[in-house]
Image (cartoon, rainbow, N blue to C red; front, side):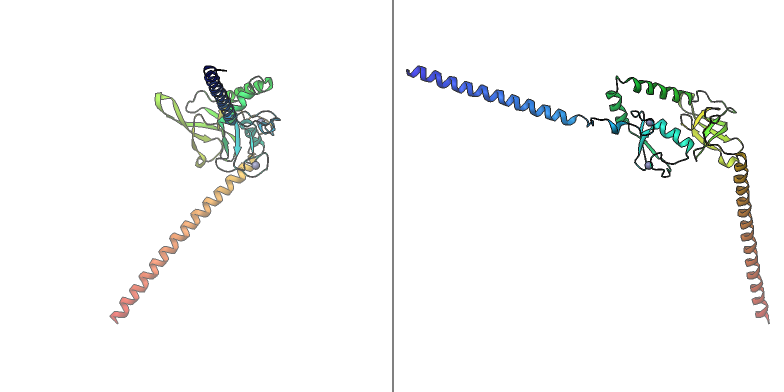
Length: 260
Ligand SMILES: [Zn+2]
Ligand SMILES: [Zn+2]
């Protein structure tokens, strides 16, 4: 082997080494990229149990979490609350204030994963229909409608006034509960789930309603309270007059004593 051959061989080995190194690096980069990509994907358990609502036994639609951290579909919670006032469907704890929080990203991921699931499609359509049925499309003063009161009982009520927002679209309604004192009148947003066309919920079976006898008892106790309050106010007023009078008398006595 002459000197030139020797040189060629060295050059070849160098090039080969560089080539192998480059290949290896590319592979490492690719591996790294793929592991990074896998990490970004959401965790999906194989049996899907934590994507299933405990009430309807189907994948969540409009997922909500309660304040006691139990999950179900929005409609399932709503239906449950109509029969069992303000109690969590899972642990029966009382729900107060803003008690259900949605999570749009969970809805999004379940929607993607269940794209070809026929049962899920049917459920989505049913819920869309349910929402449509509960929507009041037009508001006029004097119209009657179903209103969900603050303790989760559907009542019938009347629109007393309408507040308009931008583009002259109704924004809020001032409502009065039929058969109830006007102290309960309130203002509700027109797109609130607490409003529904007349009879949608108040004429359903298995929905809690006030019985006439209960209503009378509540109103009587309310009147008694109001009377008690006004009596208390009167008593206070009278005691104030008495106090002033006694002060006046003692002042007058002082004056007389000084004169003597
Ligand atoms: Zn459900
Ligand atoms: Zn709970």
